[in-house]
Amino acid sequence: MAVTVFLTLLGAMLLLGFAAARWRRPDDIHSLEEWGVGGRAFGNWVSWFLLGGTMYSAYTFVAVPALTYGVGAIGFFAVPFAIITTPLAFIFTARIWSVAHRHGLLTPGEFARARFGSTSLGALVALTGIIATMPYVAVQLLALKAVFSTVGVSGEWPLLIAVAMVSLSTFRSGLRAPALLSIAKDILLAWVVLSALLVVTMSSGWGEIFRKAGGYFATTPSPNDGLILNPTGQLGFVTLVLGSALSVFAYPHAVTGMLSAKDRSTVRRNIAASPIYCLVLGLMALLGFFALTEGIRPLDGDLNTVMPQMFQKLFPGWSAGIAYAALGVAALIPAAVMSISAANAFTRSIYRTYLRPAATPPEEARVSRWASLVVKFGALAVILVMQPSYAVDLQLIGGVIILQTIPAVFIGLATGWFDWRALVAGLVTGLVTSLALLWDIQQIGAGGVVVKAHFGGSSMPVGDTGMTVYVGVVALAVNLLVTTVLTLLLRLLRIPPGRDRTTPADYVADADDPMIKRLDEILDGLPARPVGAHARTAGSRSP
Image 1 (cartoon, rainbow, N blue to C red):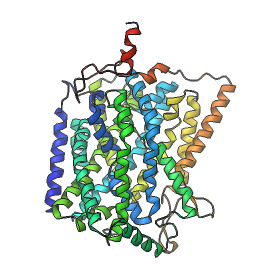
Image 2 (tube, one colour; image 1 turned 90 degrees about the horizontal axis):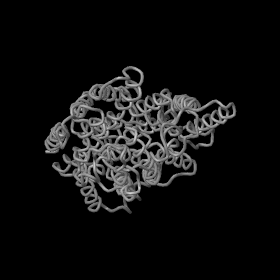
Image 3 (cartoon, rainbow, N blue to C red; image 1 turned 180 degrees about the horizontal axis):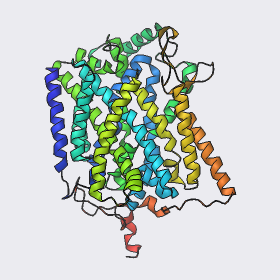
């Protein structure tokens, strides 16, 4: 029953992804503007579901519970970082929406190029975003693999099926496919959350769950797990929270979701309401403890199967099938958006800049379609090469990399003071530092045995103190130091900076700005001429 319901719902989702190609589209979808960001015309509800489907993914529903199941309290770092992210995103995403719409930008790399007047910087930011996205796509595919393993389908070929499913729908439909699927995903997710709460309520209750989980962690040989962070784990926890909060909206796919919104108010409303998803994230983290106390055991030592196994053991067959489908769609949607955003970055900042400056809109869309396939198969290669113990490790390694774009993109949204040459040097230094530190991290197993000599995690030990620190924060500090010192030096030498092609007014432009081309008729039916912040002063502007 569970397998039948799972496969039926997953097949229906695939058909829905294909149907999205004709979902309230204009006459011509064969442009990057249409294929890559849905015509920049998603309204409140579509943007809300797309934001949730993209940012709260299989990472939320599989990787985080697996981490709390395996190591306890430190797995809750995802909850405070998601909350801290909200005020930062509220400010910066509205600014990047405005400047991107004024200048027709689709990617962070294009913004860096326009802000600091350097095609080299734009290409480097784009390439960094592509590399950082691949491990994050891999997290989603690992989650889907865990679901397939639970229903009895083992081996690597389920991942190939997952890649094919995502590729077929997004190749044809672009961002419309994950946008439409996000609505269906949240319906399934609501059922899973309510079912999980019901199962917990019918068990011994949270008090007993915490008592049993605490007793279990007290018997493990590791000093770093438990219900409460020990003193040596607090620095690692805080730096994980800080680094993750800074990185989550620096990913290209987060920007893609925001740029598809039809106006600034849509962006700000959705960011302001996003803490609602944090409640779900906290619940899923707690379910890791619940699975532990219910005697759920991962398949073949793969902790990513903990949640699917819990659904299999504790849910009725038909309900377990719905839960599997929810996990599957929660993996497919962000994988699709991530591959689209990485493909857009390649097309706009590398292909069009260096290879085909005169590329037509249909050619851009065609190149992005094929580039999105490369990203997905690159994510498969990441899984096969790195073989992580926790899926969350892949996301954190991607976070280490994407953090190095913070000075050029997010700080760039606030100030254009940095010199582009200094930003390039800082970004390269940060990436080299990141890779050197990640290479040196070992994964230690039971009894002190070295399980993996290199790339064993994302947190590095601090001497012999027993404490750890997130590598991304260290590398970002090095990046900012190099960028700041070199910018000061270039200023002292009076070397002229690159030309900033943006103006202060670009960062507050709204949908009714006369310089922004609108496509109101496409989606999510607010009035054809929406009222925005600029409408109140429109009468005082010259024609």
